[in-house]
Image 1 (cartoon, rainbow, N blue to C red):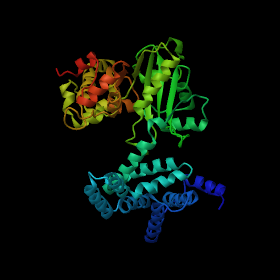
Image 2 (cartoon, rainbow, N blue to C red):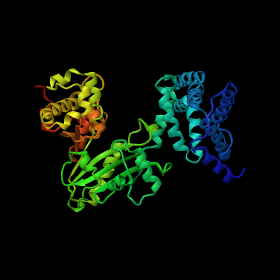
Image 3 (cartoon, rainbow, N blue to C red):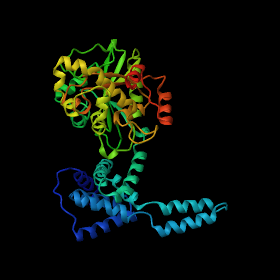
Image 4 (tube, rainbow, N blue to C red):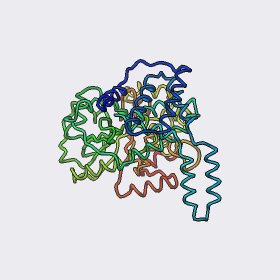
Length: 442
């Protein structure tokens, strides 16, 4: 078979929508043989391509149950051989302190090397192979919740992805209205914070007073890994509906002294545990400062996505901050239409949100990470909690997750490293004096 026809066939494997089937007993044996061939790694490049193509075709044609069996077979049957590891470890222990120690160490490493990764890396030989593996891990993460025997394969894939997706390999690109339409469609699909409702909405987010940056991997050039949306302003933004208003006049970016990061979206579920968001923000800040030297304030307008969840598990806090409404009433948002009730709830809800951001932890101990995922991200990147914004997101989602509250995290360039060291070392949360006062118990 000519190389061109192989390439054409391999490209067709990654196209979704194929009919999928269950894995029969006969299919299991055939799969075991296919995996064994990949683990052996015999032959040259063409052989590796062909094997990877057959294995990818097998996987893509399977239904959910079959895919889980596929992954479980790799996890359980293609790890290191325990007898070889034991023998190599004994030989290494005996060689410690002798001239043969390093050779014995190399032999021990080789014995511990898993065939699982040898199988997985062969997919790199096919077009879109890296994307195939990322999507495969997204499947794996779904199955992992109910099948912990898959954890060993997940750990190996996560480790490999951390190497493959090292920030040194990633490319930062600014996306504009002139970017390819297929890529702009991906932005609409992947936006996870504030839904892009139309092409006019997207165009507004790419206008002269906005910037949108994304990280790309060279083996996934059409797939943004993570992207950040930025508004150039002259103030600390406090209302997301105003920020996203497609009818608002375009701000003169020459007057901008503030950059507001109002949406950060990770796009690939299969890359969970691979962290490059902090590098994205640092690179974006550098790019913005180069284009707009007057910029001296960098902050977010962020949701508080787990506030309602925390209140659900700690209902007593509503009474502690002087709120008589139930969680369900607060989350529905109808109260905001009554100006007097909205005025009365302003300070109690701000105290509630401040206490949550300052004290709510995911686990016990002072060093336990914050309960809120957005807070974990920004505090872990060296930001400080700057200001709470009341009725800043009056969309149904904004009320459902945080009773309309949003928060500004401030990136003070001279303080980032100190904030980060204090947060990772002792769990200390950097916050403004106004947040600290609101969080203080009465």
